[in-house]
Image (cartoon, rainbow, N blue to C red; front, side):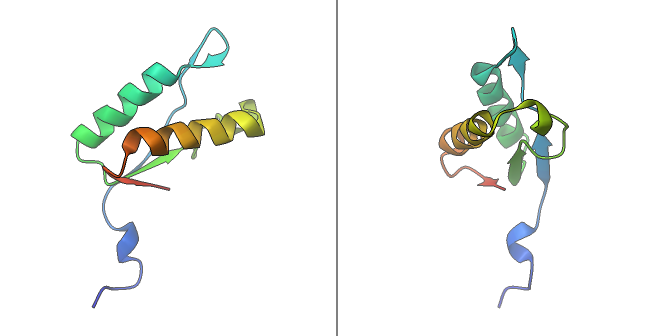
Length: 79
């Protein structure tokens, strides 16, 4: 029997959204995802609490989350 909240057990990391020339730098974002997974991170939180949310449009916000989910490809959780 699993305990309440066990789906959130482990290390969760709010990753920063990298920018280059005023645009989201998706190549660097993917490198960050790979680094965190290699380091044993259990869950990634894109556009979490690192302060970039107010600087992204709703479309950019959704694209960053979607890109992270696709690149993670089941290797860890995305919250």
